[in-house]
Amino acid sequence: MKKKEWKTIKRLLGCFAILICTFAMYLPAQATIIPRLENGKYIKTYLLSTWKNAYVYTRSDLSTRGVSGPVERRYNASIYPSDEIYVYKMTSRYCYVSYPTSRGRNYGYIRSTDIISGFPDDKPQNSRGSMTTYKRAGSGRYGSISNGDRVYKRGESGSYTQVIYPIGGNRFKMGWVATSDYNRYVKKEELTEVNLSSSMYNFESALKGGMVMDVAGGGTGNGTNIMLWQSHGDNNQKFWATRLNSGWYRIKDVNSCKVLDVAGGQRGSGVNVQLYQWNGSDAQLWKFYKDGNNYYYIKNKLGYYLDVSGGVSDNGTNIQVYELNKSGAQKWYLKKTSRYTPVAPVYNLVSQSEIDSAASRYGISSGSNAYKALNLINSKYYSQLKNNENGTNVFLFEGVGASSNASSRMNAMCVVVKNKKIVYINKYSSTIPDNPFTPRLNGGTAVPTMLPGVYNFTTTNHQASKSVTRRYIPYAALHISSGGTNVLRHNSVNSWYYSNSGAINVHGRSGARTNNSANSAGCILVGDIFSNYPSEYSNFIKAVDIVSSGTYVSKATRYSYYRTGKIVIDRSYARDYLRNVGYSSGAVDILAR
Image 1 (spheres, rainbow, N blue to C red):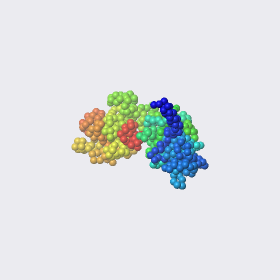
Image 2 (cartoon, rainbow, N blue to C red):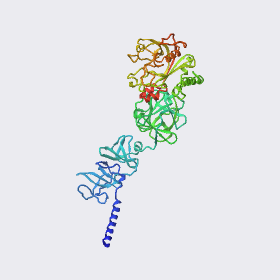
Image 3 (spheres, one colour):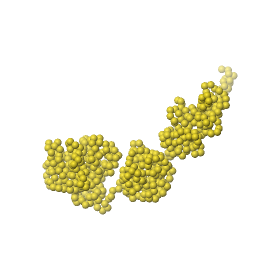
Image 4 (cartoon, one colour):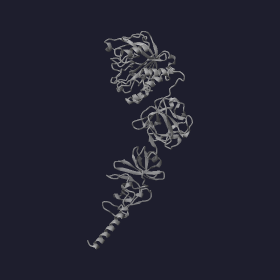
């Protein structure tokens, strides 16, 4: 190659490089395309100004005014403020658009600043509510944004925010919403969501120490008000916060088993908070956000926060929901607590040494629920049993013994206390009859509910099924009643229960102690009838004085003389088990309260 030719090529390459650099200066900022407009997608919008036209250009470098289209025509084309524009491409410098004319829609390029008020870096967010949109900041209603719509912010003007939102198919609109609405429904939460362990809490206000969320008057009806009150430890100031599969929480009053509810499911600041039966609506779903100082903001799914009205810390101040303002009225300290149970200050039905001795004698570990159940004897039932302290008392604690078929229910532990001594324990009793609300958990049949409480028992003779010994044999059992009314029924071979019987069975189906058999619908205190577990049967009827302690029991035995006593049904330890095997929340609330 000749030297002269090489110089010519170098000059041409230099000119080409200059052209490339010059062209690059006019390349659009692709990163600002929000949303991506391809495959026929476009945005409907209006000019920012209500009085100024926008010039149309033939090319994206905005160098030549006119219209670009199938047939290019050069003339001073303009878009009027009354024209609705369709945007097919959007960059920080230009937008490729169409606009209406008397002969159809024309196409061309306009300056982005004619329709876009800013170029924020905000990522799109899903709207958490509905909002009215406008053609321009505060004028000319344009449409609405629905709950769940994906919203792109473009800029702000005064008290309005420019947004892009979907309107179906490949279409979007770019309009304006009130900035207060945008902040409430679209703006990214500035709080950090936290997951709490499902537990029982006091909700103490940051306004004043010792002032807690309280169910007015300990009421239990739908619509009972929620307010602020000095802490006193009763159950109407304690709430179960339970995390649901959706990630939202149910907040349930311990006293009534009803939940915190935004009245009428209304959105808005100042809406009242009340008690209401659980229905799973948005008005009853809550989330927790940490404020950084061991306090929480508590947000309802409708978009508002638990708030003490007026920021006043007096007894009786109403609790409502309000838009987030991060004031002390919206901050809550959550303190784990437990259900209040009256405790006798000086008297124990059974001494601690007696409990420890019995636990050792019957192989009960000190960390088990069975051991905790034994300790309940000391205080929980003192007031009901103090007049019977030297009599015979039978305790049934559900959820502490060996388990039966997990698809049915948990076993119970039977304890007999007499003259302040534990004279009998059976860790393999079957369960207390219940109504699980889901019949599949109870052999397909809902049996009568046996609620926790203290009942009277008298000895009675129960007639055994002939499947046991080929003939009917009356044998000793307990008749359970409250105020003269039978409170417990049992099953037979041909029916799930007798409507006129109130006996607790002192027998059960074959294998009822094992993990692979279903339970009897009745309450089995000692496992199978005498032929299978003679020692358990014998020890129980001796413990409750059906026969004297020195009697040799060789067969199923009728009671020989009349005996009375108290029987305690307690389900404190069944709660988690019932929930885990699929009982409904309503069943757990009733059966494990």
